[in-house]
Amino acid sequence: QVQLVESGGGLVQAGGSLRLSCAASGRTFSTYAKGWFRQSPGKEREFVAAISWSGTNTVYADSVKGRFTISRDNGKNTVYLQMNTVKPEDTAVYFCAVKSVPFTPPGIGPNEYNYWGQGTQVTVSS
Image (cartoon, rainbow, N blue to C red; front, top):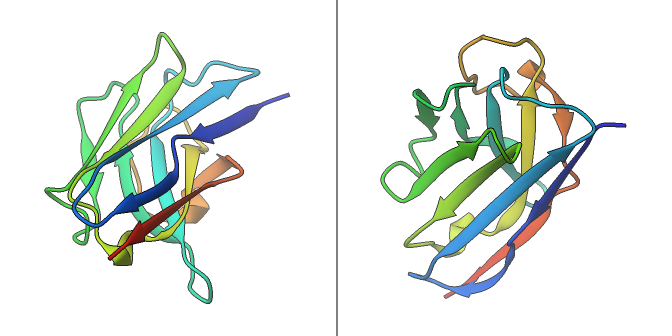
């Protein structure tokens, strides 16, 4: 059974940092792009960042560019999201996801991903 488990969320002050992790189990995803999305109450799930299967290509939402960094460790079957200089508007539940098709570029659309974690809450206080 495939599972994606996020960790590292919590409460942080504006301007601070958090590092989210997403560990996969049940199968290896070393040839699949991975992404992070987030969702706030009353809003649709939105793209945050994505990384290619090799780790050489990354894509970011404009709202987090220059502040967040996505990375991956295929040996650990894990993807990370380093969040720096966080803002109150970054408050959301953060989800990791694995793309449906191997060896394809990282995408920004949720429908490109078919494995999802349960989410981890990030709350940024002002």
